[in-house]
Image (cartoon, rainbow over all chains, first blue to last red):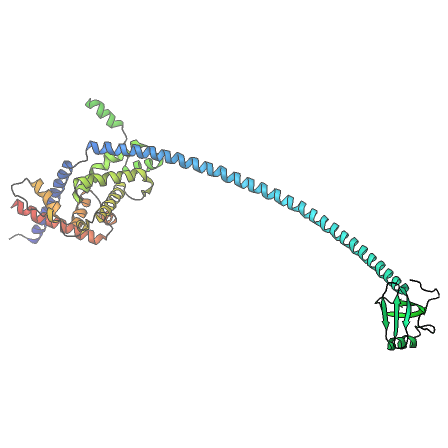
Amino acid sequence: MTKPNEHDQGSSKKAEHFETRISDLYQHRKSKIQGTASMKRQLMQSTQTQSSLYAWFHNFQHGTFAAATILLIGLVAWQSYEWKQSSDTLRYTSVEIHNIDEQQSQDYQHISQQYQQHYQDYLQQKALLASHHQKSAILTQFENGWELRTCDQELVKISKQLIDTLEQMNLINGNFKTGDSVEIAFNISGLIVGIHPNKTLLKC
Amino acid sequence: MSITLAIKSLFSISHSNEWLIVRFAQSGDKKLFEQLYDNCGDDLYHFLVTQSDIHLAKDISQRTWLKVFEKPHLYKESGRFNAWLFTVARNILVDEFRRTNRCESLTDKPLEQLKTAFDFADPIETIFDKILMSLPFEQRESFCLQQEGFGLQEIADITGCGVETVKSRVRYAKNSLREKLEKYHD
């Protein structure tokens, strides 16, 4: 009967022996299975292709990067130049617009003033015309209101009430009878503001 | 001739894979990449053959090395280059399995075609190969990675699982190997 210690030592030695044995067998197997020279050649050829392709791509990448950088710098420079230019132009334009605005304003004021002046003149002249506007006519009927016939063959009919009103306001001077020549005064609105005897006989 | 080689090897400075990949990422010098391939190419290829088949292993190996060539900057200087290389390769392999609906290869069950019975008249190396290939994918993977010199944590990182899981997978793989090899021995 073997002692336990001896047994352990024996099994340990056996295990070591086994490890060495399988290791040797493994190495023996490895020595039989090795890569061939053609495999290496093929790989190196592939790397050659890859290498040239990589070198081309690398160069292309560098070229592209350089071109892109130059383009970017160019764009930035152009953009900044454009921005500078455009800002200057804008300032100039602003001044121009300001001048135009002022001119327009002056013109407008000038036109407005002229218009106001002309309008005042027109009103003045109209008032003057109205105040002096008189028409000569011949009184043709007397009893139920007056009928005044002008040389232009215009017939102005004046009601009895209006004649009474005008008489009350002392706007009809004198005693009239049919066939008398009269002066009819109109106001701005064309209303009769007075009927006066015409000293000169109206001849149409 | 041998004297020349001896002198050459005496003066040649051997750099670590980590130094090589960092320098390669910086300079893109193909010689550094070639040196990396010479250092790790066979290990990776053997691992891939063990996990798939010769044709797929060649393809995956090629794609892995091309990825290393294209994106060496993805290597994190904190870890070993080999661990990163095997991680990249394993991810490509698993993606390929998923793409070609070979997900059964990833399960714990051994592939039917690999469960071929071995002849006891075969040399032990052949039997070892057959036993190894009959192991489930994940056990075989963990065992191979350990034999490649990776620690449990590194294997866990490469395979994307926990350390305890890796430990038990390695143990199961070794037990299977031991059991079957002992049968052969007997």
